[in-house]
Length: 603
Image (cartoon, rainbow, N blue to C red; front, side, top):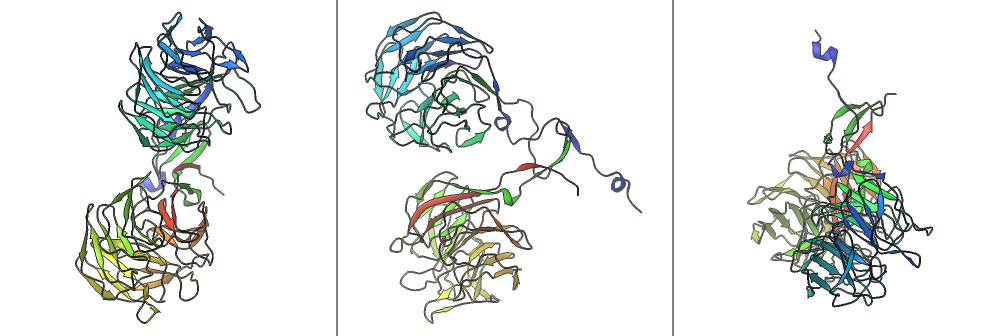
């Protein structure tokens, strides 16, 4: 007999709009009141609803100051010294304007009704950046000519030189206060993506913006900011900063550079873009306001709901076909034939070769690599797996095949019991530090590829059932009881794929592209492999859904990858680093699959 709930079905939540991952990702730009005079290359102070835009020019014509009340602009007192390429800080009633054409050192203070000339900068310059809370507390940094890294701090009476930027630059943008600021983008002379954070005494490099640019606008603070527009070329791109990384969000309606934003008292949830210059080129008076919803429904993978606004049923999915590759932070030591461990945001690059065997080990935090303690015995084409806190590294080549096994505890490597058979040309072990599998490879003594499989219990290696086909240089991922290998070479490039069930290996669906020296990540039911030699370097990426392999978006660069993948990662978040072909490389790429809301269709 059928149950009532099976007949009736289940409830589906009705929502007025799609679910979103965070408040900032729900933000959009909308038109605000136009300025009285079109302009660019000026400066700003204040918030979205209490803003001042001052100095700047429209061509060679200098412009007046205007204040914004959240809906309209009003002309107010002009500065004493007209100029453009100026920097600013403060609020709509307590602002500073400093520097500008032509390499000016002039500083003026705004008190809400008039401008007063005050102490000059120590170094006159233009296209610099500024930050600060008021007309008595500010920071000036960067600028031109030449390309300056100079930073000066203002205390209400004079400017004092403090610690320089790490990257000298012009046409950058700043946000924050005199003691907590960001320096973003710019050029020297090429357009930069570099971002630096000021803690009151020194600058530290942090995560780059996704799109290098100059002459953009900003709003927010040093830990929660929005940067938008800019060039070169001129774009509408908007990016959000959460204190650790940048995320692209909704674009401006009008692509422009050299406009003004919000400097103080603002948040990344309430930003302003006024004036600027389009690619035509033309000077604009338009204003755009950014707002993010305070009330929203959090996105939830697997959720089914009805969107009453679009009159459609939706499901929240993470389709691998939508995954894309993006550049990550470069390794400190370029290399190939390296091994990997960990995940996309907590990865490891272990040993390798360039042009001799290296012992170097590096850890990845999702944006940059840091050198940690070396392995005891450097090897190329060894097997690595596990996590950043507990990894295993076994076998490999160094003056012949090796049988050494080393364990990582998060700080040091310790030699433990050896493999039963010395071998190299593996790419990764499979599984965890306490439960791993070492399959296939190459035995240098007799110069043969092997089907041998060894199982690690945390203390010692035991020979278990062999692969069906002897091979080496394949992708390996999964767990000790549910492992997967794909590709490699049997003497010829292979597309073969085998799966381990804890007892024996079974052949499964072949790859679309036969290749060796490829990398992999994921599980027996959801895996990704990428790159390799087929026979030349390839960027091809394939996804295994538990039944068959499907080609998805390629890597940005075709290259061989050795065991540089993250076998403990997932098919929706994969990391690869280094290369031996073409050439030894420090490049890192990240494969990420976004969570999306898809319309449910019935056919």
